[in-house]
Image 1 (cartoon, rainbow, N blue to C red):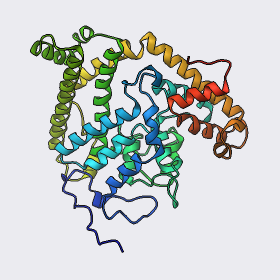
Image 2 (image 1 turned 90 degrees about the vertical axis):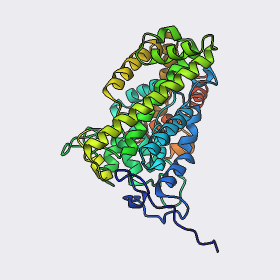
Image 3 (image 1 turned 180 degrees about the vertical axis):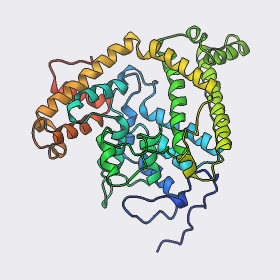
Image 4 (image 1 turned 60 degrees about the horizontal axis):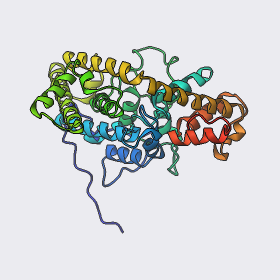
Length: 400
């Protein structure tokens, strides 16, 4: 017989933090773990999921074969989780919930970054569309099939809420859900996620951590790829200040060290700004429970007005100098063709799908078949999509 174990330690977070001992539970009732809190268990289920492992070969901007040092969805998710944990620890929130949401936030992304998502959204126009947040919900509630008693990961209500609402409410109070992605509507019929309210502070922190991580790693990747230079960054507010500060303090510093030291300081500056602004908003709100955060009429975790201006300037720079760079455009154009051609072939000829996927279809170009093909293609890694395309269109290889 297993030795008796004590429950995980009692909740000791701030009054406005999510309390794992007060979770609204899971859709399918389970005995909770004797060694982990409900949110720790959520985090572990996400890490062990097939969708999380596939993030290793799903890219942000650069297709996998372009270099081993560029970020993937997996390395990005780990960076987001680190920032979210640090912020949550300082603000006395539940670190495990914030980490679980940071690790889950990209599960629904297609191969080839936003280019893949755009292509799949276009393919699915006549079948209800495609949205990566809705796909994440679909993955964790339905597509992952690891457990004997239920489909999905059976995550807590608070984690599912954060998956859906980390960027804010998705409807206004009393508004119809008819315009929402199908996955949101379907799950709302099974378990209400209070779509008109904000999510927990942990979810809001995870969303901001995503912003901090991808802005800064895109600076790093863009410099590494030669899409722009340090001199180009000098005109940007805050970013230029950080690089100039390091350049002046360490004359002659090697470019790689200059890049890493400047980005490290930039991340720290953004993190400290979030702590200051969020603390100010918490004080003004006088929140005494996590529901006070949900029912606020504004986001509580946020950048200051000044940092929002810096963030906007950086995003505009990256859009023009990186995301729209002709080298990136060429790669993403190829990626869109891979996604589009695979979808069109498989939705027209579902008998080309692997047996377990083919069993879920019901004929060419039906709603059910389109959704099945969408799930299949969205779940691919970059390299698997390229290989599948090569196998299907052997005489017309796109990536050489």
